Image: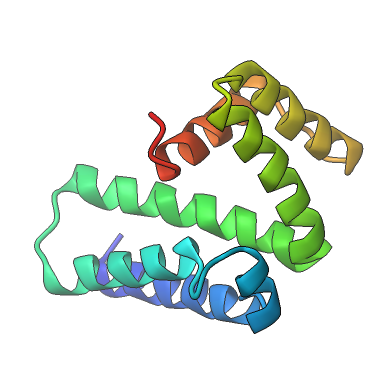
Length: 136
């Protein structure tokens, strides 16, 4: 995939993030000014635009974009309040070093909402959250 095509898709992701960004009140509840997704998307855009990246770096960026896209589409569907309640439960489990509980919580949430979720998908998601939280 060419650089300009990747940048265009990252711009689409940026638009989705802006469209699904929490309100000021929700951000205060989350104890943030900006979401990590918005910050990460901006970093990835600048990295692709301003740097020569290896194929592996581009693949990692594309994977990260896919992960954020999936998450933001879920936020668009169910809203921040519902999304945060699950996120909060997962975060509490991870901070208490209960990774299996976090995986089960995420997987149950997905299945309860009519989506398929393999154990691998749930584990990958929880691993990603764990890294984002700086606990890995």
